[in-house]
Image (cartoon, rainbow, N blue to C red):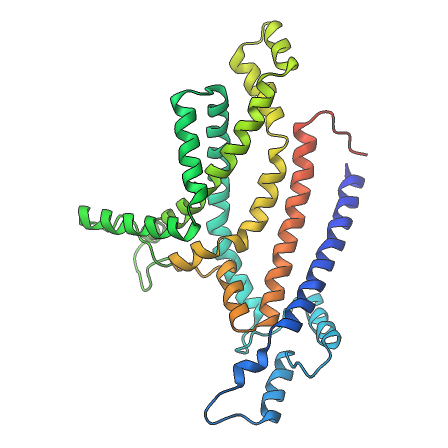
Length: 327
């Protein structure tokens, strides 16, 4: 097991290095930080612009390989450079990672768990009303843009608050600025702000996972090993959970693992609409402001998450499928 994990870790580390290198060279050649200083009144001199860009390691007059070497040297020591405004990329990343993970961990876990449950129920009760209803709702959600779902949730919360006359749900920001009070009061405020953006992620995850899980479970229901288990006296529900569901979850392991890694930047619309300043929002804003260092840092972070997702996927396969032999 240890040798297997070490070998896989080395493979993923090489992929992370390649992804980060390609990301830096792509961002460094397509983004133009110099344009942030053009068109100012009074105009800045070329020498002044070059000095500021040199300080940020963003001067396009410097060979990109040399800029990459400087940035990489800082990364080795935990310094990811400066943003176009001169702030620390490391500090900004640390704050935004917490925001994104707080939103995505809960949304991914609930979405995956409920999606598997809906998919299994749809397969077991194939062609029943519950199966048809879940199929229709899933296709409606999958065909609806994420930003539209988020906006509809905000409108629903606004109407609910107006009808009840109580601020049951908050739909802007991570918390209420300037709020004071005890610990429980602050936690409740965080929860109210967390419900709607989490729900917008959960709905999409349920719709996505339930379709795949239903098909995987249908393939298992007609298998010989499941009929054999029931023929030997195992109750149907026990056989479905112990043998059927475990086998049907094997192809889903990759979806679970990699989807979480990609959700970091995939939740951009959710973060933007609900005012959550996470990694997805930061990535889009950084591209808009030609912030090379920030863009590459987000790329590196997502690559590391995909690395971790790959490791978890391999472990899940080994745990779910007894035929897998780790050498």
